Image (cartoon, rainbow over all chains, first blue to last red; front, side, top):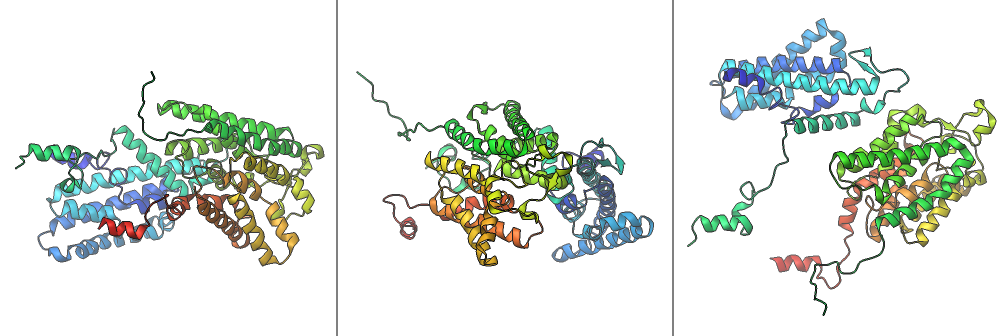
Length: 226
Length: 316
């Protein structure tokens, strides 16, 4: 049951893109076409699962002072593997992803999951966590990529879907359109999840210790004045 | 005996309302509308009416969906619609103009909280979105009086994009271009009306146009070309009606001067060194973004207040 939870949390509830706002760079850069988003997402998922497994296996061996370089080395190894495989078998995707493929190494989702999850958990939960997070990432990329490709080029996975009388809006393909679409998608996801903007109450206020007005004062009085 | 009522400030209220200001701006835009109908024919009027209607509709719908009070009555949507249509070429398909209205009202204005809370000018931003999306449609300008000449005279270039035009033609609007931007005379009449009715301060437009004039005079050394530079493109329209928008430009006089000079500088940089033919809309958008910073540096000293250094010392 809890294994299932580790897997599903990454897809919507803790989606690395839309909820944690990690990995924005590839999300904006490669999503001009849905197929690019899919390729990028699956490559990242592969690296994420493998690096989570390996880091979870060797977590006792890594000295905590140099853990980040160690994680990066592990991740970079898998990224090299993925990029060589893509270059050999899907050269079209390799050339359209370009530099962003090697930049998976420094994708903060992977490093974040290594630091927050894999280094503290056993192998199987780590693998499931990586798979869930990776699929959540892929889902976002394909969603953003589809919206941008349909409105920006009138196509979806290369198939023309817009009637020809409507001119596609080039803006969606441009970087500015990426920001627009990502912002709108995040807003809609937050709306669906009924996530409210953070309220600043006295309990959550970072300055509560120094504040002597309103609720804090009452709390202090309740907490026993002299 | 009347009761003594105690209430917080402000105690002095002015009779000026948003609605009155917007109505004055609409009246000031009318000469340009008439000029554009004369120059570009009935389709110019249709375009303007469609833009205004769509802006009002989108404003009403968004406020309704967001469950906020209805603000259609303040007429600002009509001003946005008119300004947007003045920034479009007459041949643009109408559904693209509707997309522009959507961007202006829903994305730029209502997503940020409505009139007065938008950080960028809605009409300018919508124009830029359309420009980036439908570049070929947005840069095919109809020749003036094309409706008398038949279909072969459909496209011409503006003086900015290498077309030839005399100064008088440019002043009267007998050149290719967007709907409302060609006739400098009508725009200047509207601008003078706005200054007389104290709706806008002349500082920003004068600085904006003056900077462009001076810079092109220095760079070309020819007074005819410098005059042509201020009569061409959307400069008059942008300087008079868009760089003076209350919500998106600085409040104080020094701020307005900085805003105008900055706009002129960016316009000239884009016109001289950029790949795009026209820089007015980008310059106004960039300066809109800088407006909060300009406002922060030009805060006027309150009457009787101590200067900043002393206040800091007192706090310590």
